[in-house]
Image 1 (cartoon, rainbow, N blue to C red):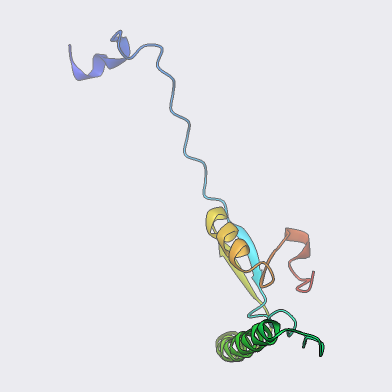
Image 2 (image 1 turned 135 degrees about the horizontal axis):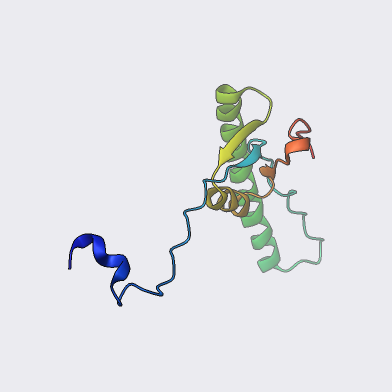
Length: 119
């Protein structure tokens, strides 16, 4: 049997046809840059236990570190992209990962709303 007779071979008949590779989809995300971390921890009242005071001090230290990190990242972002948000064109999987990692930073961009950065 020749190599061109595969279509007539019993092993190849009634085999499902492989679906066509879908075209690459592009998802547009808006990168608003680094966002300020959650609100600062509140100081416990005067009846707090020593453990609560220690937890508060560690929360404040972590908050200060996150604010310093935010300032550094924001300055780098503004140096690279200016003050405004950036439009990113990504594949769907990467766009989903970006949104899962930083939902406050990345927003979906619908075609009719791409100009509205704050929505």
